[in-house]
Image 1 (cartoon, rainbow, N blue to C red):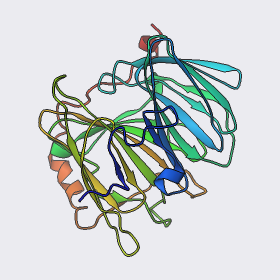
Image 2 (image 1 turned 90 degrees about the vertical axis):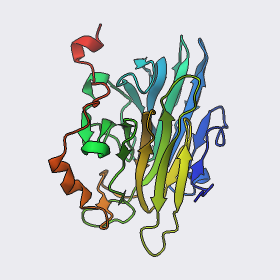
Image 3 (image 1 turned 180 degrees about the vertical axis):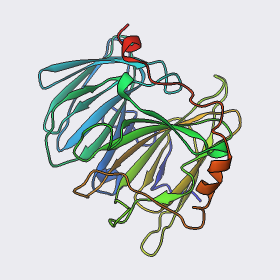
Length: 298
């Protein structure tokens, strides 16, 4: 199954000065956005936040972010597989400039919002690194922009790292209905796959209908730079093939007045969670941990 509306291969969304550009209009929904800016050494990028709030997340490289007469120095990282990164939050109705002396790739995770908050710096040392699942369902989550970790108006963003051969986003779950125990959130998956330099790694991602009115149906082979949109439906698993670790950046937002990530497991597979109590977490995890404040200040 290959739904080109929802699986956007690397390069297919390039535009407006970005290597990846997904906005609510092109996604066909109301809130979530993702942009990836690629800057050569010494280059800069300017943008207006408009009616959205944004978190600027280095995928590789370091940068300086200027917004509202404030300046944030982001140390960044070599790659998404090498460490937790610091980040910057910029509010709606603002002008932003990103400068990178050494060059790099920078994700802009965004959401349309109502309230204008304060521009802020998010240190890498403050990012909770959590391990979820067990056995072949083990994965690492960098909760830099989770609802319970960092204040925003609508935007939720996290990173997930899945060791080679493991499955994440499993059991399949959904968040497409506003009700007790579940929030309504649009979601973007942005993928990168690690592997030998002369080999292009792949992974797989599944989304399927959650009930009447849901026609979301994707079984995609994903590569570095690919995007999968999840407007509704059960999503998972994300599968890292043997020999290739998988990373994905999740961007979520929705119409709820409460900013919260509440999910519902597919009842057919929810029992898998119970099996984790008898299995250890994959010994390869964490792939890395957040630096301590002392380490980050060096």
